[in-house]
Length: 219
Image (cartoon, rainbow, N blue to C red):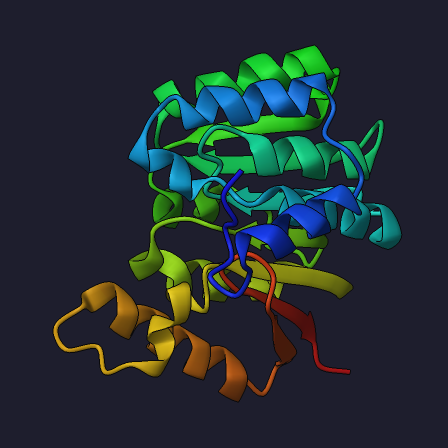
């Protein structure tokens, strides 16, 4: 498996995976089904990110979570497993085709009852969430131009000890380069600057996968 992170060599990535929780049959099946989609499979998070999401959900004791950008459902699978029975993960995505792969594997893993999938543009569907600050965990991994809107919609909904995560914030290292007409690079750069300057929150960028921003409310 090629490393998702541009910071890792293939050998170091293999070492990392060899020393993490092993993939089970459902996880391997989901990764293989996604790989068969071709180039678009690069949107799937790295296995080590999946383990991180599951462990974080466990440590937080997360009972209510939101994911924006579900793709084929690997991150949702890991979040739901970490959250445990009786928890609620609401996933927002626009693709019935890709999320159908996720639904199949959530069912096989026995976590489908924990996951509610909402299809439609997230800028519109997020408005249907309760406005009270009740979210334990948020994961954003969707269209980059929407990142700031999703962040602004979800930060007020975090509970005081909640965590918000945002993927792809290092953008394969291109965040260090002039955007030069690359709209996605410019969007990520502006988003990172916004989060770093947000007086409501504290944050750091973790060098895992393609960069993962970790955000909590300022105390």
